[in-house]
Image 1 (cartoon, helix red, strand yellow):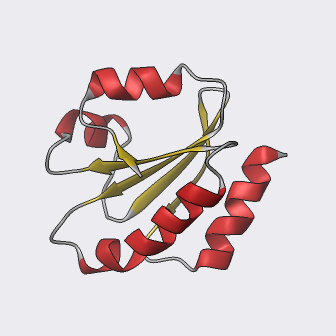
Image 2 (image 1 turned 90 degrees about the vertical axis):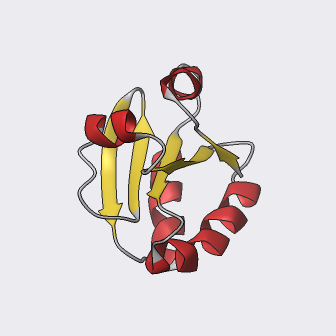
Length: 105
């Protein structure tokens, strides 16, 4: 799974036509690390249809502030340049799959 390292990476991803899932996380965050294998699995499955990217909050304070991330993990579902849904905290694979499928419709 690809990581957004800076604002330039973010702008490149956001300019694509695909829907996007941004996963804000930190290496020290237990729930983030628990969620990581699920996000990685989904990024492979939805690779052709949805851009799924990780953003480390410690390394990307500007993006974290832009999205007003207050707790992690924080997941932002983006379609047509707009945040259409947002989740925070540990979530199940089926719940994430439901949100991703909704992004495609």
